[in-house]
Image (tube, rainbow, N blue to C red; front, side, top):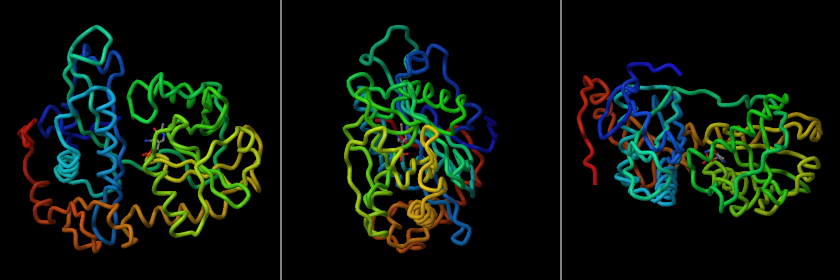
Length: 345
Ligand code: PMP
């Protein structure tokens, strides 16, 4: 991946160019996958001349929970990490869609597998980003021969770096077999989720998604979609166990996640769903989702944290994170020198 020298990251307590953020090959997190991370999208709104980070506090709350699970001593609060993220974008002066990747990892250069008695560190990196998978057509998905990791093996509800080997096995198998994406089943054969997305199925007039106890990551997009389906589109939504072959009988199906956004599915294991095209309600969800994330729906303005301007643009309802346009631009124009700006706790 290109490392544009103007992209600023937060690494070891300092704002530095992304290309300079480097770790030792002995780093515990590198050797054993003992890290956790988030994927957060920022959407550029042309009309507002603004980048909005979508559901920023929720992402950092989840990161804190993942870190707790890995017995880490996260040195920054979710609020501090939110501010650091905004600052990275301002200092990079990015005015386009971005993808933020905060990570907490066991930073001790050590050999010896464990979770305890290790230091940890935080890094916030980002890249300009478009679509992660093609969402303008209905995807062909296949059920993976790789089972989803179980809560008592590697907890899927924590977003753990090492756990993504499980997703990588499934994703590569699916793509090398001619599918766009994989659906993973639990050890008991029930549907869990995609390789990096949650799943929604429309069947007999009800939207169904697997419950949080089915080894899914408790997706923030999943929560967003449940709200939009219920509140805006008047749909019934149930969280219940889904059998594999129910997917073949679905009237509509889509995958969703920060990276994938709303990804319609047209076939499962070579069984076409309905007419094989993007389902009508799925298309509505997709349209609405993009209006919401780009900050065009005042009712959901509280989900969109502006990077550059005061909270007033969106008539925010009180949980403002705005830091003022003037401050943002001024910071973006300063020459970057490594300066520890946020005290470590
Ligand atoms: N499941 C997995 C395994 C994922 O990696 C992701 C992406 N973070 C999701 C679901 C969707 O989660 P979110 O909507 O919070 O991005």
